[in-house]
Image (cartoon, rainbow, N blue to C red; front, side, top):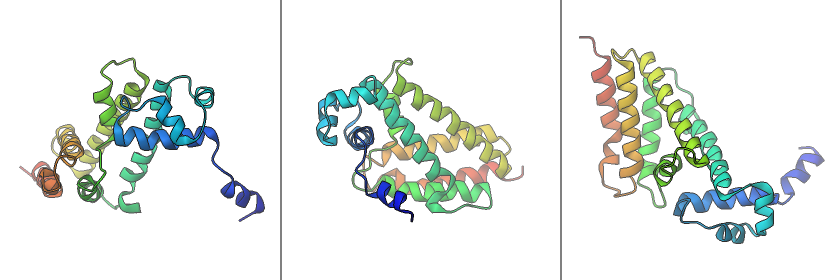
Amino acid sequence: MTKKAEKAADAPLRAADRIRASASELFYREGIRAVGVDEVVDRAGVTKPSLYRSFASKDELAAAYLRDYDLNFWENFERPGGKTYGNARDHVLAYIGQLAPRAVAKGYRGCGLSNAAVEYPARDNPARQVAEAHKKVFRKRLRELAAQMGARQPNVLGDALLLLIEGIYVTGQQSEDGPAQSALAAAKLLIDASVKAG
């Protein structure tokens, strides 16, 4: 590591980065609307003017949080468990296999993007727009993977997988012995029924 890289690694986070990190933790755990700007700046150890120099409004901060969440989601989805998979079926099952146990772990609050879509019904809200854009791309990706699996109706299988995953996000928060524990078996049944000849 160069001296410049070492210095950068040791440097304290910029105010904007601390705000983002604090907002991310609070928004995910408590919900975006439930968290005030005062709580974010207090947790970040900055002032309100620092927040508003970096983000024009709380809505813009929420949108930044969701853009970060989106990037993290795609890293996890495209490489479940940090691995790549040789075929679409294994890829999807690996993701669901990683998601289901995580969904029943303590502190799990579902998908931050799905939660934001519920919290913000107005379609012109910046947070809602990030969430909607993500869900559209995710739906398209699942349909592509379903086609790669050889599904007779790839759009239907892709949508069924999306519905299953969204169900994991929600039911995982309700009970550790709820339906999320059956998600991997359900995904296998959906896929197998969709790709069988007939």
